[in-house]
Length: 104
Ligand code: HEC
Ligand code: HEC
Ligand code: HEC
Image (cartoon, rainbow, N blue to C red; front, side):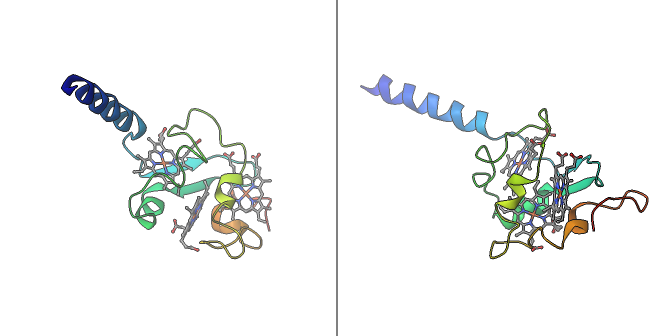
């Protein structure tokens, strides 16, 4: 019986360790419409250090795959959401690329 409990604890510990890698500080995503700087540390702080809202539901804990779109950002960045909406705020995410950001 005791060894069963021990084995369960071991598996649980390994799962938790595998889930949480070291969080990055800032991530920069290139886009034709002007690169995007995502302040990972600031976003994490606003979630009180919890990873679960974003990982792995919206994104993996890896930048190996390209983001492809801002759909995940929209989970919070929408009218009535917990952050400024996307509409009319393009430049708050898309930094101007030499005045040719392509977004209004
Ligand atoms: C507000 C959303 C959000 C929260 C909360 C969040 N992350 Fe992330 N994280 C992201 C996004 C977005 C990416 C980029 C994903 C991609 O490129 O596909 C990322 C990427 C990462 C990466 C990959 C870094 C690299 O250079 O490859 C790691 C590791 C990571 N997060 C760890 C964590 C951990 C650990 C926590 C909790 C302590 C956490 N994140 C909380 C949004 C978040
Ligand atoms: C868990 C909800 C959540 C997700 C998901 C999220 N954000 Fe945010 N974001 C916030 C909040 C809350 C703020 C601060 C409040 C505000 O400025 O409206 C913020 C602020 C920002 C800012 C202003 C600078 C800063 O960090 O203070 C930028 C830029 C930004 N987010 C970009 C992004 C991008 C790009 C993504 C997707 C890769 C994303 N966010 C996904 C909640 C989120
Ligand atoms: C909350 C942050 C945020 C806001 C606000 C935002 N975007 Fe984005 N946008 C992103 C992210 C993140 C990507 C994906 C970048 C990547 O795949 O590397 C993206 C991608 C795009 C792309 C595809 C670019 C490419 O290279 O394929 C276009 C076009 C775009 N956005 C236009 C807009 C327009 C227009 C607005 C304003 C109405 C806007 N975005 C507002 C975060 C944002």
